[in-house]
Amino acid sequence: MRQSQLFTKTQKEFPKGEISRNAQLLIRAGFIDKLMAGVYTLLPLGLRVHKKIENIIREEMNKLGAQEIFMPSLQPKENWEQTGRWKTMDDLYKVIDISGREMALGPTHEEIVSPLVKKFVNSYKDLPFAVYQFQNKFRMELRSKSGILRGREFIMKDLYSFHLDEKSLDEFYEKVKEAYFNIFSRVGLKEKTYLTFASGGSFSRYSHEFQTVTLAGEDIIYVCEKCALAINKEIKGETSKCPVCGGEKFREEKAIEVGNIFKLKNKYSHPFDLSVTDQKGEKKEVVMGCYGIGLGRLLGTIVEVYNDEKGILWPETVAPFQVHLIEVPSENPEVKKTAEEVYTELEKKGREVLYDDREVSAGEKFADADLIGIPYRVVISEKSLAKGGVEVKKRSEEKSQIMKLEELIKVLTM
Image (cartoon, rainbow, N blue to C red; front, side, top):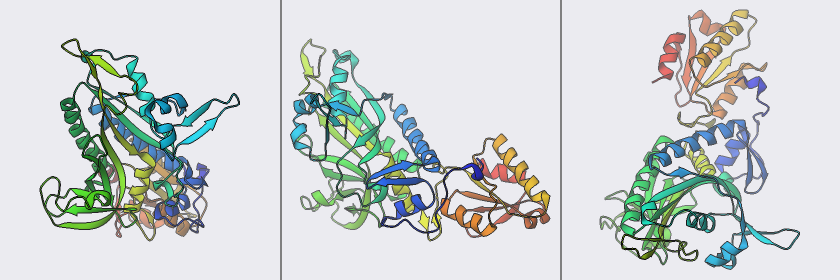
């Protein structure tokens, strides 16, 4: 993509009123735009990152055998009354149409997926199975001060699994844990993300969160020094020992919750009489699990972990482009000619390139490249031509080197 054709622009100053690093950098670099507190537009660069995160998650969900669907955001009041959450869920957006009919803007989809599954499942032979979606969620979040980490409208991947018994649920639950760690590893957060025990409510002793350690974190977790599992602050007072290894030494960390998983059991199957006939011909309630990841929150967390004083440092797997190609303004026509040839050749080889062909100073181009944070910066200038190649620098490194185009293409495929 030619940067001259990108309709968005970078900003020289940090946006006023934004205190979180993720929002400061993402707005200034032209990845997102703030409409109001907790509500953001994904701009072209931001949407490219968001889609890459989505596709990584989709691949891991498909490996689990889960099937993708897409459920409505607008949900009938009756379903929420059936589970008792119409009056008890305090962050539920409620809307009334001109006829007086009340509905909810979905913050989650248990009230929709359970009656949906009831239409198709009636025998133990239909179980187990799982469905997932990427869907807008709406939550009446009054503390929207953390950029895209805490939104009122956001996209979430929610996965729901359905089982004949708790043994089957437990087995799938462990597979989801592994899939989640694969996701966080692939987006560059593996070393900083911990499986964290949280209160499980009335249906199981524990639920689990996945918490990424960063100074920007709103949560406090305690990481076991012995086995590297963690406990969140809410249940730390209930136990002095690690629930897994029995360790008693913990280190306190600030962290961001990037995912959570719950064993729902029959909490949402029971209100809708979601049951099947088992092997003995007896009626049996289906047991469920749910598993969520907020994509915007994950995107914001990546920025909180990967940034420096100049801007963002995207991991290669989620970067909007692989290469930021910079043509240094010159009166020598060979500079532009070579830049165009390199751009064409890299795209022909399947590399994702943002080509800065704008008529601005070299200093502005370099500053914007650091702010946007694409992994490789490739510079075409009179200096690089005199040395017989292109100047290549990784965003995460200080030194650059001169490479032949063929060498660069090999590096980009490693």
